[in-house]
Length: 304
Image 1: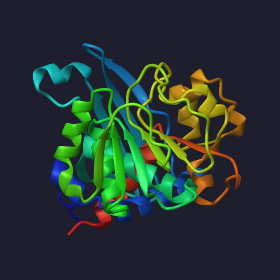
Image 2 (image 1 turned 180 degrees about the horizontal axis):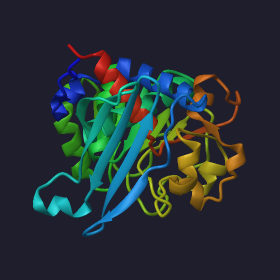
Image 3 (image 1 turned 180 degrees about the vertical axis):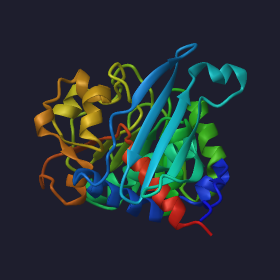
C-alpha cells in the first residue's frame, strides 16, 4: 500500500488549519493527555548557532501521531531583513511512522502559544475579559491579538511598549481585527482584568501587588535570565504553569523569585478547576512540544 502524499504547508496554509476555537480544544485535550502520560514530550534540546542563535529540538509522541519541531531563533536576523524565527513541524502517523505533513514552525508556535493563553483566560480569569493589557509588540503579541479577536471580539486591548510609536504602529497594523486597540506606555490601567506579558525582558518590569480580579499571564521570558513579573507577583499569587517540568529550567520569572515548585499547578489543574477561590492567579507559559502535537492534530482534522 503506497504511503499517502506528504503535505507541505506554507505559513498561510498552516494558519488556516489552526483556527483558534478548535485549536484551544485540541490543546486542552493534549494537556489532559500529557498530564495522564498519554503524550511523551521530553524537555527541549537547545543547540548553539552562530551569532547567539539557537536551534530548538522538540519532539512529542502519542498513539495517533508523532511530531518533531525544529526551530531556529537567530536574534541577528533583523539587521538583515529576515525573520528572527524559522523552522518546521514534521508530523508522522503514530502506528506506522509515515510522514504525513510539514507545518510552518513559527506559525504553529505563535498560534498554539496564544491558544494556551486563551485557555488560561478561560479557566483562571474570574470573569470574561473586557479589557486586556498586551505588553509587547512582536510576533507573539500579534498572535495573541488575533486569538483575542477570534474568541473575544470587540474587547478593549491596551498595547504597551516602552516606545509609544511602536505601540501606535502595532495598533495601526492590526486595526482590521475587530478589537478596540489602544496604544499605551507606562503603568497598566487599573481596570484591565488580564495582563499578558510578551517580551524578552532581562529584568522584571511589572511587580504590582497581585489582585484576585486580575489574571497575570507570562509568555515572553523563556530563559532563566529573563523575567517579566517580579517576586511580589510570584509569591502573592497561586501559580499555574503550562509545563511544570520545563518551567523549572526556563521560567525566569519563577526561578529569579525563588519560587517553591512544590506549590505550583499545571494547565491540566486549571482545566479541572483546581484553583483557590480567592487568591490572585499567575499563569506562566514556557512552551511544550505537547502543544505542537495538539496543533498538528488540529491541522490534520481541519484538512480539506
